[in-house]
Length: 353
Image 1 (spheres, rainbow, N blue to C red):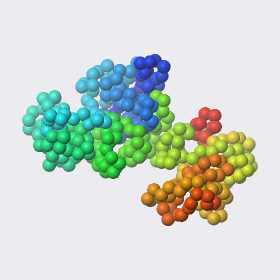
Image 2: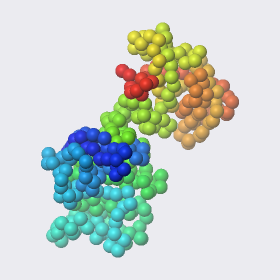
Image 3: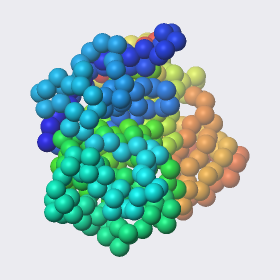
Image 4: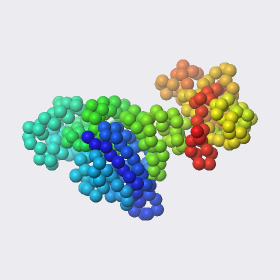
């Protein structure tokens, strides 16, 4: 096993107008599962490909197990990679696909069979070893790709959106299995996705990327609950965090002509404009709530009702119990628990502490 360190990695797009990665430094501990998450074009796949040796950085270094591998080709880095498109060979049976990396390494036949059988059992492919990829479902093909990656016992496992081609239900099922498998192997894993649910559920830590840089890194729930900048709060979460502009006055938040309770710490910021954020699930609907609002849309999601409401601060998403009934035009009252509010500088969009 091995840790991964990237130091000051810079990669510029061929046009030269924008950096794909902008001086990124990152440590992945030995055995850690780190997820890179962010919108399309943020640089996460470019970063992964530089670690893999499939892209050459303009500057900076990649270190694996304490060894500088920046100038080494991909085959000499001790890595294994799972691609979004499966990248399995249609003319080879599942058994040969799983063992392809071992064949390239000229592993002896007995060891070859032992490793292939072990990977097939781990990924529930034993009954499919003599089938061709065309005879498998999408989920089974993805299992083959993962089995091939883990068979070679690489120091580091890299995954580039491996579940994006699966339907929603299969993606959720395979996500849980993948986490169990990687945990059992204890392999250092760097995983790229744009799917927030994947990032939150899989990673020991998540690194949220934006415009070629890491906006925030930490434990999934910490990053979700305490975003370091407005972008992180608006990207993580479905629905994203609600934001509104307020003024601090006499220890309370003033929004238009609406005065709201606020944490005691705000008393040190008199008459200051701030950007406040709150998650939809942290807003309470109550008859004695201090915030009047009008329902615009009610969306049943099965386990909850997601309301879009209008209040003094603008539009707001509110998540409430599935048993709650509301229709457009209904007037309700809300409460923002002060402890659930998060505050940001309205100019820099960085979190205030």
